[in-house]
Image (tube, rainbow, N blue to C red; front, side, top):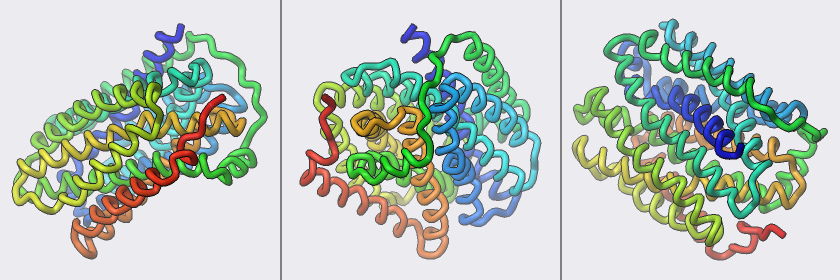
Length: 383
């Protein structure tokens, strides 16, 4: 049933995002133990989205050619294996590699899961159903820092074992479900043709932009909170509250986008995020910075469901397989995360935190103005 499928996909992306989010409270400890610079910390944070970037198109092609069920199983298997590796390894190269493999697996789980949902959903309910899965993923981001903080106390292997067990259970459940056979022969050439369309490129940008801002915050915020004296559990609590707020906002904006159009919530998210990011350097202690971080992540939650639904809508209009549309979502998210965490960390090392946060704020402001002028381009109507 639709409800069972959405519940399964929600559980899968919850577990995937949980492992992705464990890094925030672990980052100061790993930086101390492994003597990481801000740039090295950025690379460690960026390894997951780099893996997603590498796996995005292959994962989408696998959905189109072999179906979402097999793709979901492949992603879950990679998640389980990479989590074990991250728990056991104690050198930065091995940890980078483990998170990269998990990112490749994440591209498969997201492509398979989102395509499976969208293929059975009418356009007028697409934002709401995608919003439910995204809300579950944000729930994973909510509990990920808790697991990360726990790992600083009891060790990574005991703390991460719950993720491995959950991934194995989801493999068994996914194997039980019936899935429609894949009947598409689309591949890379179809993706290249699709990205020539302005509506597709706009959708890609609107997924990449919040990912860029999020990636920047994922590197700078934990280190700045630590600089102000916050410990691992305080950092974890901050990200937990932020994710809780975001997990409520994301599904709600998906429903709003179904009723009032994708542009309405997107413009709200752009305006709020631009203002909040511009103020990142203003707090002088950990508490006001934590409050600002919660507000900023909440504003980013406005983006996800409308932006992904907009990209799915544009792909449907252009005749692009939804598995490949999901691949473009993964590609956009990964590019944003890589630039935000990698380049953001490098820029912060060279010139301080003000530069990368102001750049991200400026991109949101420019996009807000552009969307106000070109609504017909960014929100094509489905017929």
